[in-house]
Image 1 (cartoon, one colour):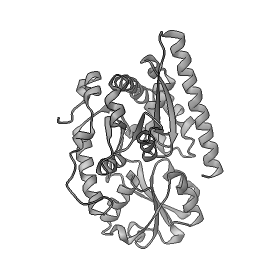
Image 2: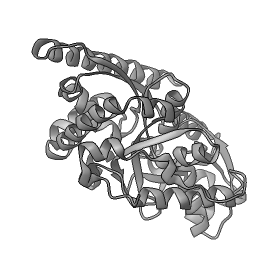
Image 3: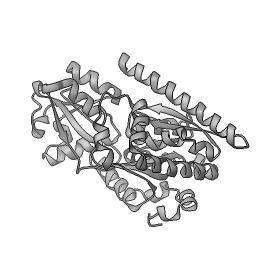
Image 4: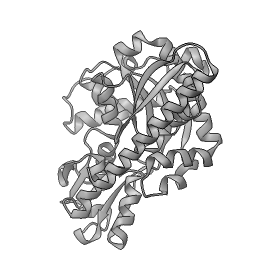
Length: 336
C-alpha cells in the first residue's frame, strides 16, 4: 500500500468512525432501547457504498435499531472474505466472488441486490509499452484482481478481440496496487473499475489509453453473509434492508449531497464517478437477472479452468428472498 493510499484509508476510517458515533447519538437522543451491533464489510473504494453511507450518516440504521459499523475494504471480494471468516456480519460484493464461493461449496447467502452499474469497468494501458489498440494486448502483462468482476471483464474483452486468456500474462494484484504496478512498468495494462481507472489515466497523461467495456458486464452489488448468520438473524436482515431502501432513496433523490458524502470517503483523485452518477441504479431487489448472470459466470469459470468442470449449480439455493419479501414484496421478482 502506498503512503497516499494509507493516508486515504486512514481518513476514510476516521470519517466512518465519526459517522458511526453520529448515528449512535441520533438514536440515543430520540429512541429507546439498545442498538443491535452490526459489522458491515464494505468496498469503500467504490461508489456502491453510497446507500450504506447514507443509511449510517442519515440515521436510517439507527432508526431501525442497528448500530452499524462500516468495515472498509478495497474490493468486494475482500469484504466477502471478511464476512465468511467471521470478521464481519455481512458484506457488500458483486456477483463474481459470490459465484466462486458457491462453486467452492462455501455456504454463502445473498439477501438482496442494492446497486447496479453498467459503465464502471475497463482496461487502462501504457502506450509506450505498445498498448495502443485492444488487439495489442496480446503478449502483454495485464494486472487484474483474480476472482473479481475485473477478471471476468478482462476475459470477455479478450474474447471479443479473438484472443484467449493465455494470450496475455495476467499479473495478480490488489486494486490498491494497480497504480504503482502500472506507473513503475511492472505491468503494461490493468483491468479494473472506477474510480481507479480514471485516476490512472490522469496519472499517465498522454501515455495512457483506456478501453471501455461498457456493454460487456453490468455490475450488481449485493448484501451477502454466511448462510448460518443469515439464517439465524432474519429480523436483523429485515432491519438492514429497510435502512438500505431509505439509503438508496437518498442517493437517488439527493445526488449532490450523496456525491459529497461519497467523495469524502472515496478520495480517489478522480471525478469520473460523478459523471457516471446518472447511470447508476440505486434500488433494492432480487431478480432473475442475478441468477442468470451467476450461471453464465460459472460456465466461464469452468471453461477457463478457474473452477473444476462440472454441473452448473442451482444458485437459487444461495439466495434467501424471505427477508426482502417481508419488507418489500414487489422487490422480489426472482422465480422461486
